[in-house]
Image (cartoon, rainbow, N blue to C red):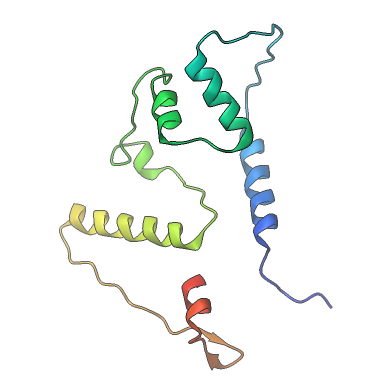
Length: 133
């Protein structure tokens, strides 16, 4: 009998990738090879291939955005858009910010109730495990 185990980081990433791929509704096929003459952008592309991008690369990419350069997550439809994250810490931070924002929006105090997690009848108190919950 297969035990219910938590998915590995790789399995989570594969599920997220599949979910994103299933959302694709348009494919553009590029048929002509183009070479960039912009040396700064060419260096960015080389660093991108190696996974070595820096903040200046990020700023350069922002200059290539067509339309509104930033999107406010406080206005529709972005304030209700689902967000995919791979880390519990990021999920927790997003949930906290969302709860604070909603409390301010409706004019109420935010109340946080922390649960005590148990595993096989024993309270989970190991700091490394608590951090992951």
